[in-house]
Amino acid sequence: MTQIGEEHCSRWGGIPQGKLTEFNRRAIGLLCRGFGLGPWNIPVNWARVKWGSERHTKFVTSGHGLATWDFNRLTQLVIGAHDECIRVEISPCAFRYLSIEMWPRAGREGGMAERHPTIEQAIAGYRRAARQQ
Image (cartoon, rainbow, N blue to C red; front, side, top):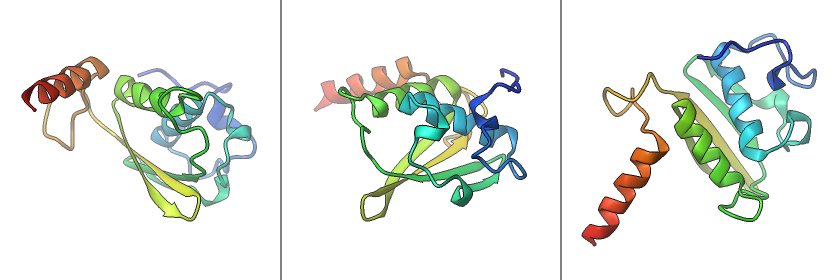
């Protein structure tokens, strides 16, 4: 795992630093890379993020640009989640807002709640299932 340095996007002054864990910083990095924006441009109320622990982070944001192609933020978020072994769940939260929750996974092997496939494994699984229909 890469060491998170002083220049990391999670160190931006608009994010409360007191309770951030290493995983919270990884989650912020994934969100920023997924949205293709710095944290100052992502519509998140950083003071209200549920930082949880090393096991969970929950952001609330608008779904603007969360798509597979134009603005491709959804695609970038999915690819990043697979690359970084982070489970991402998106669900409705309030009118015009979505919850983006993240949980770390230990690696590529283990039980359902421990592992996370590579993007290549996920694509292969999708294509296998599509051929069976």
